[in-house]
Length: 422
Ligand SMILES: Cc1ncc(COP(=O)(O)O)c(C=O)c1O
Image (tube, rainbow, N blue to C red; front, side):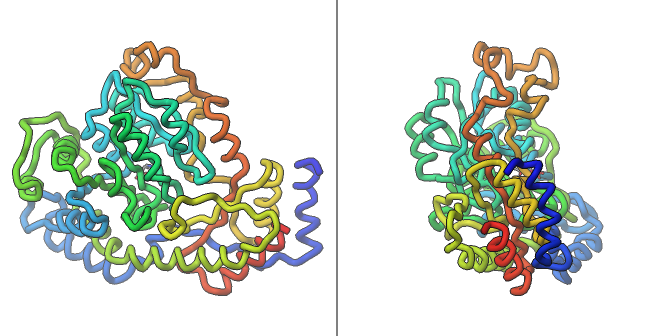
C-alpha cells in the first residue's frame, strides 16, 4: 500500500476499532516529575544564604561544590566539574583534551547540534562516522575515518543506551586517540557495570529539562585525569583554578590558562543535588517500566528492537523499534498515535550532516580554522555523507516510556504495540 493511501486509511481503521486509550498518554519531562520538598528545601537553603555565586558571597555557598563531590562519587570518577549546560561541558571537555585548530574529531552522524558545534567552536574539524543499530558510533567505521590529525572520538550514548565502549576504546587506544563520552541523554546509564561518562578519557552530562535529572539547564564534566580536570576547570572559569578545585586536585599543575565563564550557580547546584540523590530511583523506575513493555512484546513476529551492547546498562527512556522501511515505520507511528500512545520518529537528535548550516560549512567567521586545512576544504557534509546512518534513522520509531507510568499505562502501551505492529 502506498504511504499516502495508508495514512489516509488510518483514521478509518481507528474508527473501526476503538483506540486502546481514550486520552493521550503524556510524555512530560522525567526529572521534573520527581520534584518535591527536597528540591524546595535545597533551593530555599541557597536563597537564605544570599550567596548564589558558587565561590563566595555574604554566606557560605556550598551547593555546587557538594553536587560535584556527590556526582563524582555516583559516577565512580575522581573529578567532576559542574557547568552551565551540556554544550558548555562539551566545549570544556574538548578544550581539556587539547582539541583545537588543525585537529579532527570523529562524532556520530546521528547526534545533537551541540556535539558538532562544540567541535567547531574549538576550531577543529568535525568528521562524521556511521552509527550501527545501537544508534552509536560503529567502531569499524571510526577506524576508517581516523587520520594522523584525529585527536579525539566523541562517543554518544544516545537516548539511554550505551555505545559499544570496548570496541571503541580499543580502536581509540590502538590509534592513540582520546575518547570523550557524551552521556547527555544517558545520565546514570552503565556499560558493563561502569557509569557512562566514566569509561573514556573524559565524559559529559546535560541537566537540561528533557534529561534524566534536571534543573532546567546545567551540565557536568567528569574525568579521572587530574590534568584534564584542571584544564576543564580553568577553561570554565576565566582560566583560574579556585581554591575549592585546588583542594580537590591536591596540587595545581599549570600556570594561567585561557578561559570563559561556564560556572554553575548555587540555585542550579541546589536543585541538582536533590535530583542526584533521586537518580537511582529514577533509573530504577525507567528500567522497570521499559522491561515490563519489552517482556510483553518480545514474541511479536518480525519485531526488531534497537540493538544494545549491554541491555542491563540501558536506562530505557525510549523503546526503539526498527522497521524494514521508512513507510512501515511511518505507518507504525501513525497507528500508535491513533491509539493515543505516543510514538515518533527519532526526536531530540538528528542526522546532523544534513542540517543546512552544516552542509554549507557555515562557521562563525570566514577565516574560521576548521575548514581551512586541505581536509577541511575537501570534506563534504550533507545528505549522503553517512548513508547507513540515514537509512537506520529513517527506519526507527521510538515509543516513549515514562518513569511514573502506572501498570495500566504500560499495559496500554503493550496493547497498542501488539495491535499496531501486528
Ligand atoms: C547528545 C547531546 N549532547 C549534548 C547536549 C547538550 O546539552 P545542553 O542542552 O544541556 O546544552 C544534548 C542536549 O540535548 C544532547 O542531546
